[in-house]
Amino acid sequence: MSNKGKVAVVTGATGGIGFQVAKRLGKDGYTVVLNGIEDEAGANRVKELAAKGITAEYYGFDVTKEEEVTSNIQKIGKKYGKIDVLVNNAGGLGGRSRFEEMTTDFYRFVMALNLDSVFFASRAAIPFLKKGENASIINYTSIAGWNAGGPGAGVYGTSKAAVHAITRALAKDLAEYGIRVNAVSPGTIDTDFHKQIKSTKPEVFASWKNNILLGKLGQPEEVASVVSFLASKDASFITAETIQVTGGQGLGI
Image 1 (cartoon, rainbow, N blue to C red):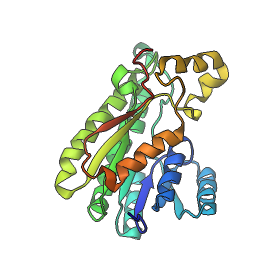
Image 2: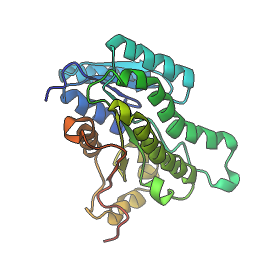
Image 3: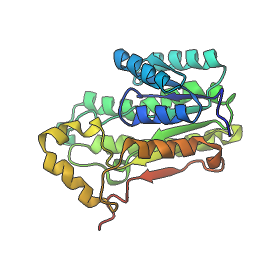
Image 4: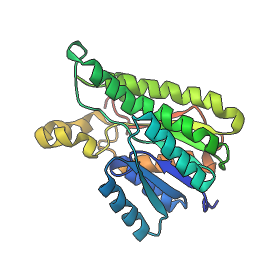
């Protein structure tokens, strides 16, 4: 099934999992619109994709800022006349803080980065997804949405649990239009997300694989392949689902 002429928007796509998702959807035949806040990285990523024969462009905006998200998603939708896939990839830990000393600003930032961003982008994209073919939204929750995260990552886990809920809520809301909404839930994926612990405590980082049934850390491409499936016609009867991409993390060995 050809995806020629179809448009995929991927937020937070200048690095890590997001870029691999953009690359995979581009290889699948989509025109890919990358979002990020690092304009130079965005321009370089578009060149990388173009060198592989992928049609791509970059829009720089901050997913935590309502007006920026709305105006840019509308620009993209109007330019192409539709959006076929929205991948709400942008998100992050935001730092670590225990609740007792957590500032309200930190709490709000992490919730904005992981939850508000999904709401803002999805709301703005819905009118254009209605014009798409086999249209869908794909969100990212996390293993932290189930286990509430490690020390200092409690609000991150809370925000990701909320993404699990909003995924199902959007699926209910949009089913009448044939728009599917699903999520992936990555475990420990070897990206810059873990850069700090990898550089300061490499032995701790290396030990994480001992808690993964498959005995290895995940690669960004392994998440991208699941996103590719969820966006495809092969997943046409799947909605309101969250697929764990964890290698069996936390199940014990």
